[in-house]
Length: 582
Image (tube, rainbow, N blue to C red; front, side, top):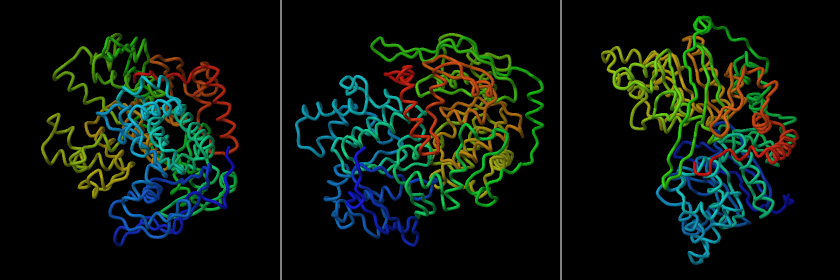
């Protein structure tokens, strides 16, 4: 690791204030980062982390910036727009949370990389292309030269993030700001991205500012942590000191809300707000389990998937088998967890279960009916009983519709009820997901990620289904909002007797939610069994590898885990799950 010299920071932020008229969402932010140093800005959604990062880049439209932002002694707030353009991407680069929204879907990866290189270096296209290949190789992309001709949709999430890091490093920046670069990535891909950032900091002396809500990721990567809440830094300290002896009650509560493999699966998860209000002792929440108990007592199999197979054509005669010989059963009232890396076939299984596209082999039987052999009105009636909640709540909602219109849409699609009856059902659905009636007239853009996900859940419940497919439904949410949504899903299951297919790359969340767990790798189920048995004694080396890749919110333990996990994945070859063309 390159030794950082605190006396000569490459970037120094002092008393940064971001104002929009009378509103000041960020106040008094101050920190410094030296060459090769890694610091973390951690906190919940809305704490001001990303706004701080965008302000450093001077990318906050309509904002008034106060204080000081100095890059190697030069005041960035005094630069003209033209001068700042040369700094932005050249001396300070940024990697965003969602690489797909940052990449042009109609341009090849090669075109976009070459363009980024030539923006800051006056070189020919040929030289830029050679540099693009070198950059892709440097970030660990297999077959880098062939990748240049491919488009973003042909890459997995982890591969797209590697492309974004390659673009950010194309000008050899002095500072790299990584804004939630591992959010929604599976644990092994997440580990590879963090290892990559580590390596780039070591090799190039790049200062890295990691913005994250994942305290496990921050523990193993950062040297100093700055905890943000309500637009202010409330605590900062060296990473070992902060995790071992957090001083601020909010930092203590944030660390207490982490969902890991030790969380009590029989109790609600405590959010930071609840811990601050009630203390750290767990509280037994009263509630009835009668509806779900009745469903489970029947012992009936609601969903039976047998020998499922799905093949995709990639053009030019290329074909990939995404799901091969997958079989499992889900009983009424059960939560069946499906876990695996990106590209393992989880989402393909979810779409097959709901008959959202054809299958190439096997059968899907839902309560005695075969959706893949049905069409027209019979299939429409069956789909009322099985609904889906997607990963990205913003992408899943119509941004032009109000919350009430979004929740009402399934009722209109199925021709259910009068206007008054539909309005009442919308109110009931909102009440179930703990949304106040004043949200009915809001648009998605005026709501948080957790609120939008509640709207998605309400929309899925308004048809009164028996079965929900939850496809990475909490992976993009911070620890507090994730806890709220998980608690809500368990409450709804208890109240309504719902059956869940819960899909996630997060084994800690799978353990908390599921009674039976199946592990997928390269389109196949490699291990399946009762939750307690599988987590206590995993039989397959791939399952053990996934467990070894789970971040730990303890700096010493997390660094040791990263070293051991790297050795394990290197030895087993399990890290080659992602299909290159996906």
